[in-house]
Image (spheres, one colour):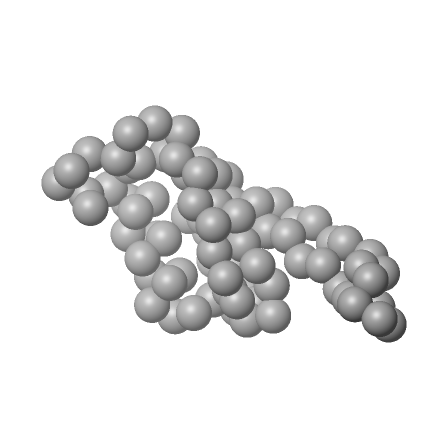
Length: 77
């Protein structure tokens, strides 16, 4: 499944100046982006969960938000 990355650059006075959007596959090698927030849109498959946990352990992104495409199997939690 896909990983959707979203970062907002803040301009003067706390007003958003611009927003950049990048879409990456979670299974592929990706750069570290500790200044970006990530929105994961992911399927609950074992290898996808492993990729997600690796991203969290490495602190690949500043914050992450999860959207599952279906219910996560209790064995994968």
